[in-house]
Image (cartoon, rainbow, N blue to C red; front, top):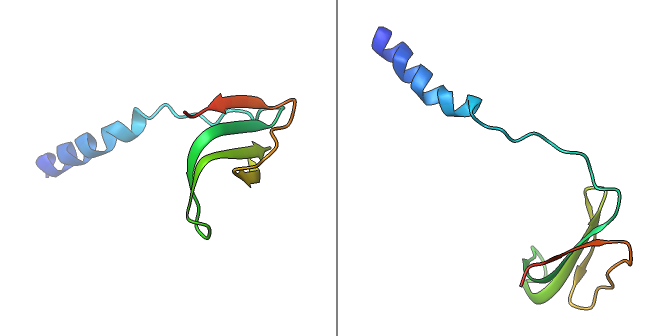
Length: 76
């Protein structure tokens, strides 16, 4: 019985070490440029742009205009 309890403790210990804490949403849109984007319905978009705002994808594609106030992440 003690062996099972010890194994359970060792198995669940890494769960307590997880330090992922949800952060706040950025106030501005975020654009990821020069990315390889894998879509469900349109295959792979090479050198594409992904824009999201308030946790939602607002634009995706090769010819997407990046908003002026967006934080830009270059995935190249």
